[in-house]
Length: 263
Length: 160
Image (cartoon, rainbow over all chains, first blue to last red; front, side, top):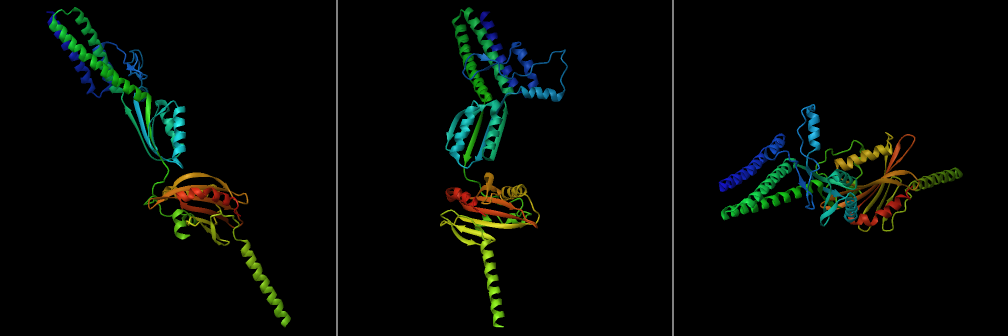
């Protein structure tokens, strides 16, 4: 009878994991809180700090269901509220032309450090830095005012659903592990003990993997990654200019190619 | 009769000398950097070269419309940056030998894969009938440009 109950419990655990994975396939963010409640009660979504310490609340938790007495906000308001709670990983890449690369890189790194960021990698005149997410756009603006940006790519990766799903899976795995430990205390048959221990190992591996992934995401969200490629030579002159001649005659007579050909 | 011819000859010679002196006085007064050789200095233009053929060219253009310095600055930048694809390296004020305020641009482009830079200084000289736009241009390969640009800036400060 006890063996049967253990098997039922293991099956239920596996089903719980399957339920969280099934949610992963859904794109409907609005169903997530309901799913969380159905699986594990009213557990708050959690994340893990970069240092790998105790679990802590994410800065932007998924939207809670409004209380029945609260008037439902209009769509734009609701969208704005939800947008403010989004967990976004910002990355950017810029090519910047400057008079001299080395002083520009030194200035840039000093600015990044002043903003609470740090150098991640440098290869020649290509510099990759991590800056606090809240200073990401200010840093982009700083670069724009300290050189001529010739190429710019900014990416915002919304990982809200992914984080929520990982947190959910982590909660389920931890609850299962607790139940397994209780079962292990009361198990007497060697076969049962071995089965429970095998399941515990699997759950422990899964929990560690999920924590690591959450820690990585938390770090990516907190610190944006910015790669700036500094260079000192201008690109080729526009081969097919928008307008070949200025409407002011004297303007057409000055400029590099005019000096070189008419001098 | 002979006396009349002598007077006429003196008048003609004096006039010619006066005109030539006037023309000579209208050429540019500018101390070019040491490595530059002035190859032409007339009232309408000054040209100078380095041994590597970096070019320094001072010219004037009439402006019947009497545009302001800020207007021409914007017109120039619009054409050079947007239409021709130059890259603006620096922009700032510059003063000539008579204390007139102008605009200095440092521009760069690539010609056949090699970077070429230009220092362009623009001054607007107000007149009764029209304005005169005086343009100083120094064009060189980037390496040579960097070596000489400070000297050219100093020369512009002596331009009258």
